[in-house]
Image (cartoon, rainbow, N blue to C red; front, side, top):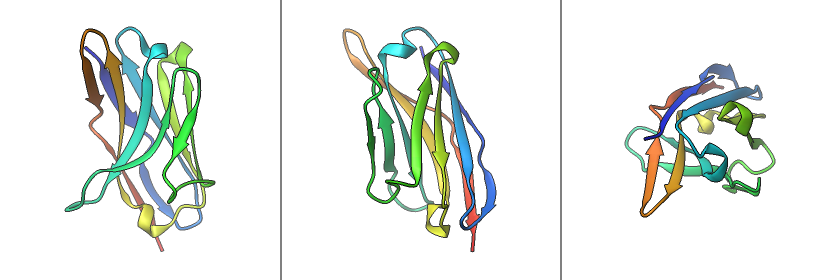
Length: 118
């Protein structure tokens, strides 16, 4: 079983920065792909970024060049550095991981609110 706990959300002015963290419990962290999604109330959850076990990254076009995903396997933590924030980045941000054993399971954190004021 994997548990994910996000932190680092808050209120920031447009143009500012925030760094989200997601701490994971459970074994095999370094082998798993990790990702960040966000969701605005009433809308579908949206992919933001992912990072594989070999540190290959992928970003949504809407955040490319502004957001950076990274991981620290020694601390079982994934980060999302968010720069040049815009009001449209306002959402609840979730981290997730996919664990592949005899089956494929995805796990999600509880989310952290990011609010960007104009």
